[in-house]
Structures are given as structure tokens and as C-alpha cells.
Image 1 (cartoon, helix red, strand yellow):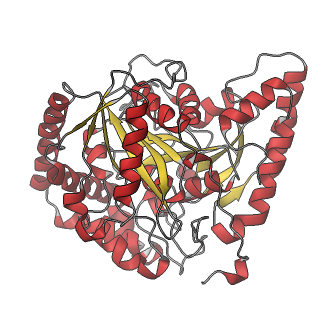
Image 2: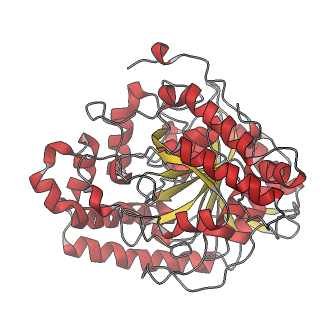
Length: 475
């Protein structure tokens, strides 16, 4: 296992001189060597480059040079974001390798802060759909139970952090793709405000919905990464030029006076709700109260409409990007990608415009609700990670909007910042999760709540055993 559990612990150990970047990277590589075949975490690994970069980081520190915030920390990159070491594939046979060149803005910012890039992590094809065993790519498996899915689309990012193969990772989120794998793999994930983090060098899914954000063990880790990632860049026309800050400075552990609006959304999950969730949810609320927060019941405005709007906008914008390739290379796409992106053909221009109008109405109603609360808490998902035996029905329901168990798409439509944190395990030993949503550009507030919760709990520090060998995992 990794010799450090959290990115923050590793950074403190490096600063104290009790470990080195070479030791951290070597330990992370050992985890990947032991478990990558089982879990399908990586699409490509940059072992030699990472060890060389770690040695250089150690030399800089020994020479007294001022280290960056992530100096010597092993990080993984979702394979729809470009890196200089290898082309991004978007885990697809379709993407032209010539599209991918050099470091994306976010990757360059990580390097500038001293991060060590260990490799490219698995994704669902073009950040949508589900695995396809007929294609020559790894099948991502949940490190808590290898017969279950990691969630998507930032699948490898979720499993690699949970397993300890990296201490932080980049994910993307258009309908829940940071938060779903973070929830299913028992880690912490942050979807920043739309426009907070530039997306240049990231394969698009939904132009007006896509976010890049950090995935790590803790809210504090995500705050450290966001401090490096956030900020306007002229290469991304959707990046918003608004002040950023050091997001770790507000992590006091104290929530006195903070108003948290709670919507359990059980009325949508119904029979899909995991029996363990009510107990875990009540325990989480007790922790927040003990930290000084005032819990109030609320109801999210236009919940169904905004969730459906996310799908209509996503599929329409994805089809605009993929339509030509779908017409000429249909068989090269994953089956689930064809189903989801191809369904955009059933939505006309009027549907797309109406979904965007609905979006504006929902954003206004939500802004009015935030006059009475500072943060909104809901389950990330009312169910734990599905098994591969149940995957077909789960993904079909997710893509069609007929399952009420997933609660992520609403927030992609609004664009608000959302942090998800683990809150315990169900009776089958699979993680469950809570998401905390704030006003636009108030990432500091949701990180403060998540950090205060994690200061009084240790769910985010639990590590999976991953004892079965690859030969024992069903195909």
C-alpha cells in the first residue's frame, strides 16, 4: 500500500523530511503493479518519467529551492485530458491521436506546482456510457468489490485514488462523472463551478456542461489541488475571470452559524434507495450539527426538470461533436456510447432551446433558495455501486433518466460547485456518499463543510483490501 494515505499527509511528510518524492512515487508504482490488472485503473503509465521527475523534486528540495504546493506528489490524469508523455485516447478507437498534443492547461498547472504525473487513467469512452468488453481497453473494477463497477466516467481516477496508486487525480463532470466514481469508490471529489477551471486540452462531451476537477482522499486534498487548478485562461472561452484563493485557508473545522439545507431526495429514489442510507445520512447530519451547523429541511426547485435538462443538453451537444464519426465509424464506438450519444437525434433544436430556458429558470430559483441557506446537502447517489451483473439495466436507466437513484445531473445543469464525501458503507461493504453544493464560486464554503465533516469521521481514510487475484475476477 501507499506509505501516505492522503495528499496532505504526504505533503507534510515531504516538508518534514520524513519521506521523499522517490519513496512516494515508488510506493504508488508498487500499488499499480499489484492491482492495475485487477482494477483497470490505468490506460498508460509513465513510470520512468515519474521516477525521474521524483528524483528531480528531491534534488530541488535538498538544494533548498522553494517547492510548489504539490511538489513530489504522485497524480493521475483522466485520459480525456492531454499530457505531453502520450496521446489521449478518450478510451476510444475513434479519436484521432493527432488531436492530442502537449499538456492541457490543468496538467501544466499541476506540473508547475511540482506534481508527478504517473499516468493516464481509464475513462468511459468519450466520458459517457459504460464499459464494453468487446473493445481493447481495460474494464474498470471497484477496489471495494471487483465484481462491481467503479462508476463513470472518471473510473480510473476513482479507483486509483481509493487503491493508493495515486494521491490525487483529475476527473471531469458533465452529468456526475467526478462525483459518481468518487461516491462508488469511497473517496472525495469536487466539481468546481462551471468556468472556474479551464478545459483547454480536454476532449469535450457537453460544451456548456463540462467541468474539470480534483479527486482525492479528503476535502483538504481537493482544496490543495483546486488552489493550483483554478483561474482564468484565455485558451478556454468558457473560463470565467473571477478571483481565486488558497482554498485551504478556510478549513477551520468549525461550522458555527452555517446553514445547511437538506434534501434527501428519497421521493425520487423510492425502492432504489439502499436500506443503509437513512441511518448513514442521519449519522452524517449529527456530525454536521456537532460541528456547529444549523440543519434545515429544503426542497430543491425544479429537480426533475433540471435533471432531464442535463440529459437533453448533454446528448445534443455530444451529438454535435460526434455526428460525423457516428455516421462513418458506428462499429468503432462502444455500444453504450452509441446508445447515449445517438439518442441525441431524438431531441430537436426546440428541445435543446427549451432545456436551456429551463436551466435559466432553475438557476434563478436555486439562487433564491440560497438566500436562506449557505450549502445544500443531498445524497450523491441513493444506491451503492452496481454489480456488473446488473450493469445493463443500471446504465440504461441512468441514460434515460428513469432512475431516481442518482442525484448528480441537477448540479451540472445549474453549474454550482459540489463536493462529495463518503459517509459510510452499506451492508455489502460498499461506500455511500453525500454531496455538498454551494453558491457559484463558493468552493471555499463547500470545502469547509466537507473538511469539518471529515475531521470528525474517518470514512475517507478507509482502504479496500483488494485480495482476489486477477484470475479470480469474473470476466
